[in-house]
Length: 93
Image 1 (tube, rainbow, N blue to C red):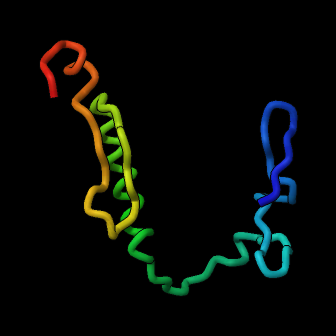
Image 2 (cartoon, rainbow, N blue to C red):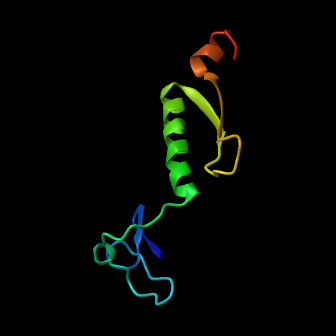
């Protein structure tokens, strides 16, 4: 998606959302692509949103997120520390 700077912000260089068909470089008009066709989601498409939910929850709990991995083949999906307030009070991890 080609972008251009407009003052302090960036915006698509092409009309609309700025999406281009990778093969034809013609603009992609998203509503035209809507259909009732069933499309199977990949394992990654299922896993990554779940990892995002966990990350958001850890952030709400005031935990420092060290790392995360949305790859469904990985064993460790996230690393985090005890809440910041617990670490600062000396209660440890």
